[in-house]
Image 1 (cartoon, rainbow, N blue to C red):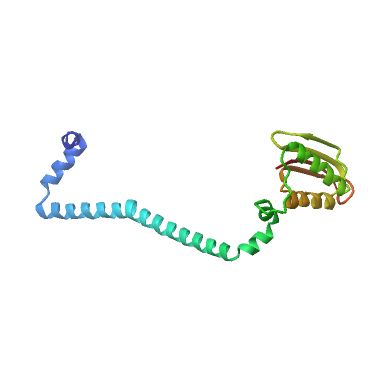
Image 2: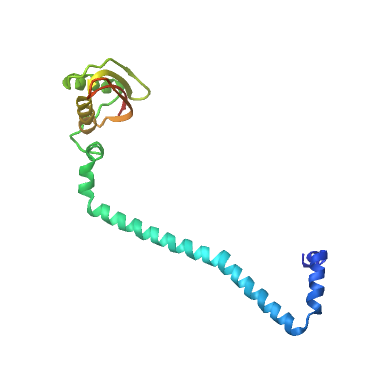
Length: 177
């Protein structure tokens, strides 16, 4: 490979020029080339690798601090999201067994919340699509919260449009277990 590079006209001229230089100049040029090579290695290889290493150590330390904080505040964090703590394994959750049970649960709890379902239909694998028009937002929000907290129902998709009257909305939901 070196012989192939030497055959290049520009390289041949540079080697010839280098050979014609006095010994002291060749030594200085060699020292300069080595210094340039070391500088390139430092700035192209070593420095980016060291920066990456330092950055990942900082990220790891931050993640460990966050984990320690989350573990020390686990009860407070779980209290902020009752859906995850009750649905994840508490015995007081009455989770429906299948799509039919989910549909029955939705109609029963909607009646209890004094909500009128305009339309509802079973969807794919244990899902139910629900439509309600001109219903109070607060009732819908309370109903959905009870479904999630007491029965482990998950809101897969939700679309709410406000009506002319303040606090009244039209809702399209996809609920699943």
